[in-house]
Picture 1 (tube, rainbow, N blue to C red):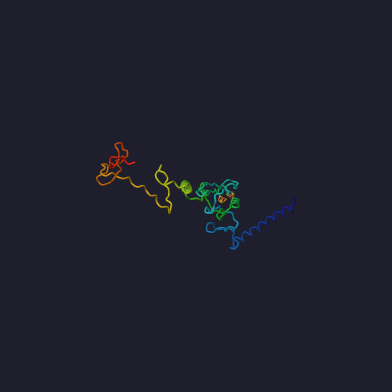
Picture 2 (picture 1 turned 90 degrees about the horizontal axis):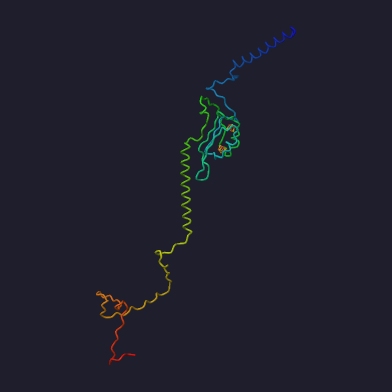
Length: 239
Ligand code: SF4
Ligand code: SF4
């Protein structure tokens, strides 16, 4: 290296240093050129497409598990149970934002678009557990018990409706006591059949009651007594 080249390098170093110092001085004195935010009093405004922390609107979420399946780092955990209306009921939904790499695949595949990126990015903590976001705040045990109760009630209701339907379809049972002959319905316009005349009562029959009620006369063995032969005039018998 000759003297000329040596002096040229020194000059280049001094010139670039002076150029850099001029830019630094400009940012230092001109408030319009400020690039350092006074955090946390001042905050950076993310762009519209910024992928911040994930948020799941569980009112829209159908518990389809598409987000769980597509996540490359398995940072979404979901639990759901089948409800009385056969739809899935979300029991718990968690996202580990300490493991998430904000690729956005879960948001892309979510059918009802319940999963979205927010503009949030501040989550300083000393505990890894606090990096797990929970979206269902009711206790899982309580949700499961409530859903199980609803399922049991719906099953009982369906069973009752089924029994009522079966009863309606079956023919009516015949009226009357068990073992009785079925009653013959009366025909309209047909006169009642005349009943045979009551047998003659013997005057002075002891079987007749004192109250004047007349009963058929009976023989010694319970047979009906023969009528007394009326004596014919002259002791003969009528032929
Ligand atoms: S953004 Fe990517 S890494 Fe994060 S939860 Fe969704 S799919 Fe998983
Ligand atoms: S993909 Fe969407 S709807 Fe399906 S479980 Fe995930 S957040 Fe819920």
